[in-house]
Length: 139
Ligand code: IDP
Ligand code: MG
Image (tube, rainbow, N blue to C red; front, side, top):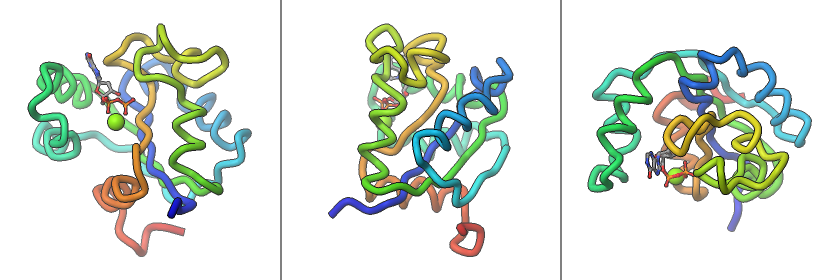
């Protein structure tokens, strides 16, 4: 059953470009409530662990290097059908293929530096949220 929470990260291209406020506004305007938020920096070990599901993919090394190149903003968000609704809001992985008006269409630089992460399942939303936040830190 779909739960009402998902996890997102604003990626280093978004923080470097000063787009964090604009992107967070998009999320709030789309009806997502912020339940936890943290501006932080991933170490190589942490980025490798967060993206371990992609360890065998050809872009894994590039992804880890990119995700450690600057600060990220980690957030737990709440809305009905949060995972699917949020994936719709951010658009396709490759900004060239992202639907007009989606966050990636408007803010992503490339398929790698694509502005935001969005969990792909309820199970991963919980795992990824707990990667950054304890239960006590979640509103
Ligand atoms: P998603 O973020 O839309 O769920 P995934 O396939 O889970 O996409 O890939 C995780 C992240 O890895 C992407 O958001 C992007 O930053 C990066 N990535 C995915 N595919 C490529 C690629 O072909 N080249 C470089 N980086 C990629
Ligand atoms: Mg994914």
